[in-house]
Image (cartoon, rainbow, N blue to C red; front, top):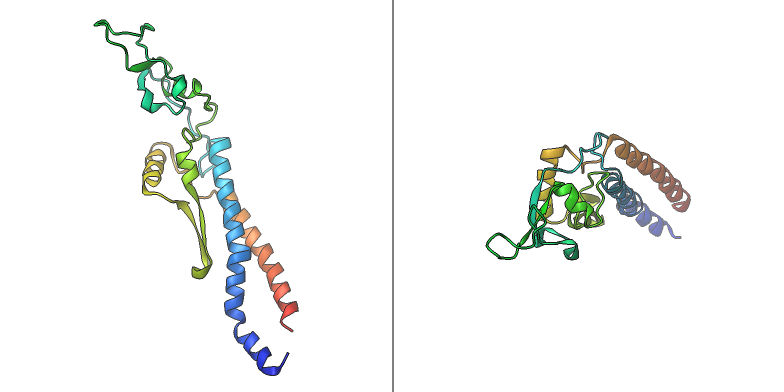
Length: 191
């Protein structure tokens, strides 16, 4: 390597380090944090502060077929199990004495934890986007609709999608360890 090449390499080092750090440290750590937040919400039904969310409503209700994800689980019937109304017209809704909890159960959805995973739209919309050119990774919802749903759910049940203190600690630990590895790698290759 000539002296000019070495000087150019050193001059480009800060930009190179920043890009490498985002690509090899920030983005993978953000990906792991995102997976941890999703796992906490889906598998454990816990909020950011670690509290378990209360169960689903068992208040009796009527549901339409459009409110079902598994359309085959919908059976139009009234309170007494009647398939037709008193006037002879067919029922267009399904009476659920066990409320939303029952609606989830008959479709094979979990009811042991309140996990915000009914159709999958909300959880599938949550993620991160690595933006190496802007030296960052952004975690959140990709669509306005799902963001609105999240806000309503969190207003009712408490914060669920910001990272927990443990998730933040894990992120910081990962970033620190990977930063040390990258620093050592760069120091041994810049000579």
